[in-house]
Amino acid sequence: MKFTVRRTQGFTLIEFLVVIIIISTLGAVLLDRMWFYQEAAEKAAMEQLAGTLRSALHLQIADKLIKGQTRELSRLADENPMDWLAEQPANYVGERFAPGPGEVAKGNWYYDLKDRQLVYVVARGGHFMPDQAGRKEVRYAVRVVYARAAQAGRENADKQEINGVILAVAEPYRWF
Image (cartoon, rainbow, N blue to C red; front, side, top):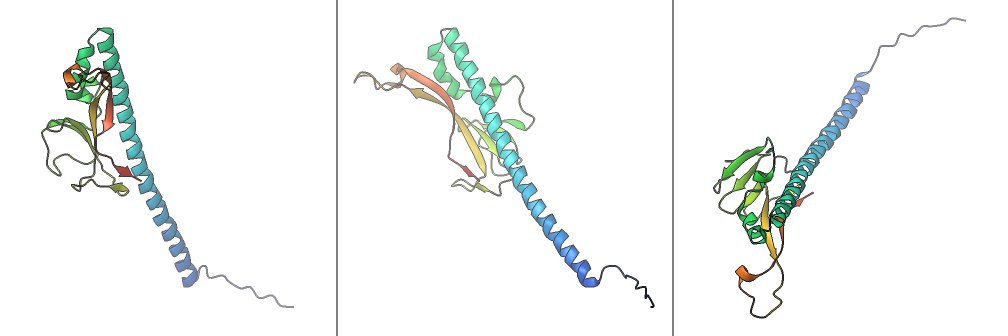
């Protein structure tokens, strides 16, 4: 009985192409997922800073209440929330007066002096719906919440009782 030894030649061209297609497909799926998670991380970081600013606002409110300066609470709406932080984030570029498109780099915060709003310019906005002006920005504003007038003659805002001060989204946005 004779045994024939068959030499293997390695991959055939078709097998090699199949392996390349599979690796390319897996790579494309991996990159897509990576971009998705980078965008989700950007959104989470933006929302975390907004939460930190809300906490800083609560400290400002507490400070004014302790000092008996309840009439000063409404002035918080005119302040830049970034000034309340002990240290401003590295991606905060400062105060700007109604900057035009592209003046503030993507992924940065700025305070709009015209609208009195804190603005985040979205860097990875593949799942972000732009506003009516076509901007990919998230805008926050400090709002004073007034209590409903208990008496009919209390329509004047100066005499209304302040119920609270909040940091709210100025324009609704949809991200994911």
